[in-house]
Length: 315
Image (cartoon, rainbow, N blue to C red; front, side, top):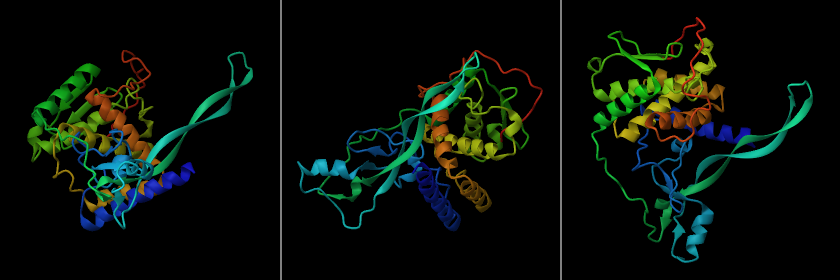
């Protein structure tokens, strides 16, 4: 069942990528996910997150068929419009299992573990409900300058984590985990500031994978292989989440080339779990940078990486 859900999700994202290639539109992860527009459940008010930000077509309010039926008990005039289509929402559930472990004295024993598996349900947009169902969300407005806020978020994060941020005129941006350094061209090298912040937050998202933070980057040996592609997708989605949270529109950077989109299309076809995993990790990374994430790395932030002599960069 879990593998089937991954396939269903990935097929939907692949369809969005194929449409983007045909129409010259942005990749599906280039969406406005700020507090005003993130999709929410109409009844609970909870935000949908992770891969659901890509699965739900509009930043709307949604409800399940059961929730609509409950509303109809008091408001029988509410009904779905003819031809309305439901949308997939996924979540992780857990089942208990056992695995064999060897104790320190060499004894074999059973350990109880919780195994996550992916499930889904269907929701409808309230726009597909007839009878005057009104949105509950109150639209708020930004009370900050997005560029000033972006600088503050960046400075707070690198100061808190002790990351070195280096500006170089070279036409290259990267994160080097072995020395915990981010390098980007200075803002004056970009045609607009949105492109600069998109590049900066892409590399800062990479830095959250450091072993002393969210521990995605186990070593620099993965550069150039499949794990590298997965990390790139995390940084792509994470940067877009941060930009949207800050209210920075980046239309120029969202005009992706056909070759770029085709590359991701092939990568997702090769790994049906890639997009779900990347969106989940990107959400944690964006929250870590914005300081809205409660789930911090299990490792102490004061611990250091042991020098290995190995070098590598994440672009």
